[in-house]
Image (cartoon, rainbow, N blue to C red; front, side, top):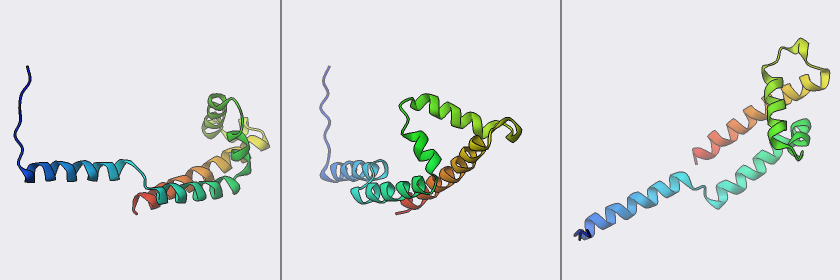
Length: 105
């Protein structure tokens, strides 16, 4: 059964403004996307082992390995794994800062 709903001009204006506001909150602007790309590239440049891992074909396996390294005690890790763990924590903090800064724009 179809219903006809009558809207006043002010109702329609309010609805359109609300939709536009919600879209702004969920969709990054091109400027925000560009800043995010530049900043995330800097994070990767300062953490070359993480950048190397991200180029691997087996992304799910890579994520599992890195996450395991972050929770494993240091005595269980090789020197390279310890460095990956350190770089991952650094990369994670860097990315969190980027997201926080961009979302304040």
